[in-house]
Amino acid sequence: MARIRFENVNKKYSNGFHAVKDLNLDIQHKEFIVLLGPSGCGKSTTLNMIAGLEEVSDGALMFDDQMVNYMPPHKRDVAMVFQSYALYPHKTVFDNIAFGLHMRKQPKPEIERRVRDAARRLEIEHLLDRRPGQLSGGQRQRVALGRAMVRDPAVFLMDEPLSNLDAALRISMRAEIKQLHQAMQTTFVYVTHDQAEALTLADRIVVMRDGVVQQIGTPDDIYERPANTFVASFLGSPPINYIDGEIEVSGPAEALFRHREGMLRLPEETARKVAAAGRRSVRLGIRAEDVSELGEGSEGQVLHGTVNSVLPVGSDQYLGMQLGGDELFFRVGKDLRHRNGDNVSLTVDLNRLHLFDAETGASLVA
Image (cartoon, rainbow, N blue to C red; front, side, top):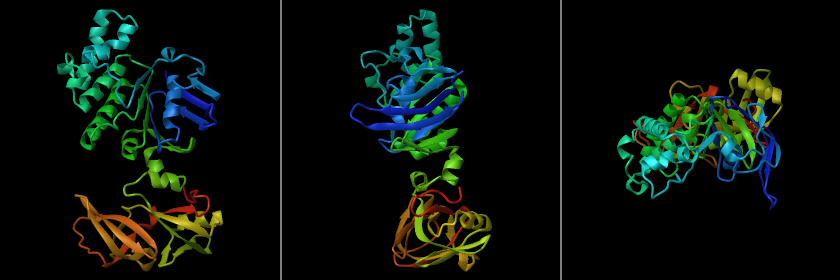
C-alpha cells in the first residue's frame, strides 16, 4: 500500500521563504496525482518532501498510517525520475538501470531479470550495451524510467521528466508513462507546469500557486469547473477569455450579463446561483472553443466584434476579436474565411459560461 497524506504541512526555509503553506492532500493507493502550477508555486518542494529530500517544517506527512517526517529517503520505498535524467555517463544502459539494485546487494540473477524485464517493457533492450552519450533524449528518458521501475517502489515520483524533450516526443512519452502506471499499479506523483501533460495523465490534478493549493479535482473538474480565475487561466489553449461586466437580476432564475458592447442572457441554473451569491460586478469567462459562427442564436447569446487577427493552426484557426477594449481569442473551423477589420458575430454556448467575482476571482457557479 502507498497512501500519502499531507496534514497541515508547511515548508519554510531559513531565509524566511514560505514555499508550501498549510498543505492538506490525500493521495490514494495506485492513484496518478499531478502537481500543476507555474515555477515557484511549491510543486517540486512538495515532491521533494515525499522523497525525503526536503524536511517538513510543520504538520505531518503520512505514508499509510506512519508519519515519515524524519524518515531518511532510503527507507521510504520511493523511486524518483528527475528532469535532468541524472544518468552515469561512464556506465552502460544496463549498469545505469541496475545501479540501485547493486547498491541494495540484490543477487545477480535477480538484477539480470529485473533489468531485462524493464528494458523489454520500455523497448530499449537493444540499447543495454550503449552509454548515455550514444542515446537520444527520448532513449535517455526511458533509461531513467527503467532505473526507477526495477526498484518496484511503492511510490513513483516524477519531476518534470518530459520538459527536455521535443513536442512530438513528449506526446508519445505521455502515452508510455500512462501505460507504465497502468502496468505497475502503484502510486504516481508527477510534477509539471504543462497543462496538456496534467490533463492527459492525471487521475486528479492539484493546482498550486505561491505555495497554496488552489483546487484539487479530476481533469474534467479542473477544466470545466475552475474554482477561480487563476485555475481557469492556467488551463486552456488559447487561455480563457474574460469580459468584465454587471449582473442584472430580474427574477430568481432570470439574469443578464451586461458589458460595454451588449449583453448575454444567463441560463436558469447559472442565474439562480448568481442571484443567490448577490454579486453585481463579475468577470465572465468564455473558453476559446465555446463559440460558433452565428447561426440561429438569439441576440442574448451573441458576441459582436471586429477581427484583428487570424491564426491558422492546421485543424482549425484562432480568431482574434476586438470587443470594445477587450481582445478575445476563439477557436473556429479552418473553413471560415475572415480578414482583419471584418465585423464578426459569434454564438456563445451559454451553458458553458464561467462567472467569477470581480474582486476575489472566486467562481460564482462552480
